[in-house]
Length: 73
Image 1 (tube, rainbow, N blue to C red):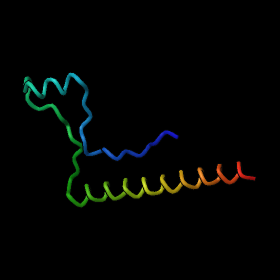
Image 2 (image 1 turned 120 degrees about the horizontal axis):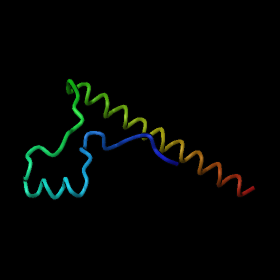
Image 3 (image 1 turned 90 degrees about the vertical axis):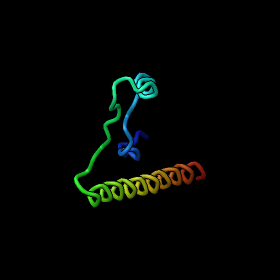
């Protein structure tokens, strides 16, 4: 089940080349973070994502339980 919920939305996305360039400090600013206008907005985004992950975990548990029960019958 592919997830549309991101738990790393405050972490910049990088690749090998960016990582190597940042070690050598070749071009300066390498990372573009996901910024929020206020601390409250950042907290709200993080809380929203946390609860979406909890909901996804509960859904997965229900689906696994349903498969387990149907195979026991």
